Length: 194
Image (cartoon, rainbow, N blue to C red):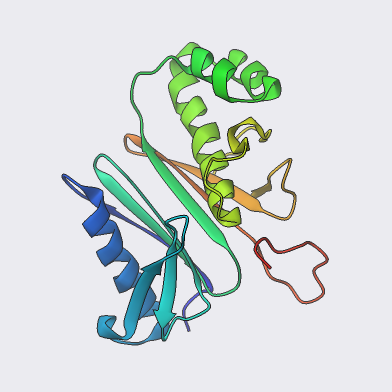
């Protein structure tokens, strides 16, 4: 039996979109125990993947950045994934512009050599949570406060979205965040999109 939530990564060169789609189809096919031809992927109005065929009703998210693609597939509830390449960037300036003051305060307390990675951990976490809700970063999602990224593999509730669990991973040259809504019988938390 396969797990209800699967996250897969693949190194890639060039445009990551075709590689992300191929990885998504492979992942869903493996989870469903079906051939890839039995999997259909459409797009929502916002551009998110919508699974059809044998995986109708399942949830999926894809992300790609230079050198890496990521997919997350859940049979139980909405899921979001985001991956970013670690690169030099003006972390504090970007944080002051785009993030809540609490996030910028947290970044100010981080070691100088960690600012870029920690900024991207916050960014990917916000993006992953926004994908759970199907909104992307529209509507002020970057300003929603997040908790500091925990040490992997711990899951932590998002501060402004307590029904969503988020985990972060630092990979070789990349930062990954996955957000999901666990479905438990009798769970009183609202499920986004329902």
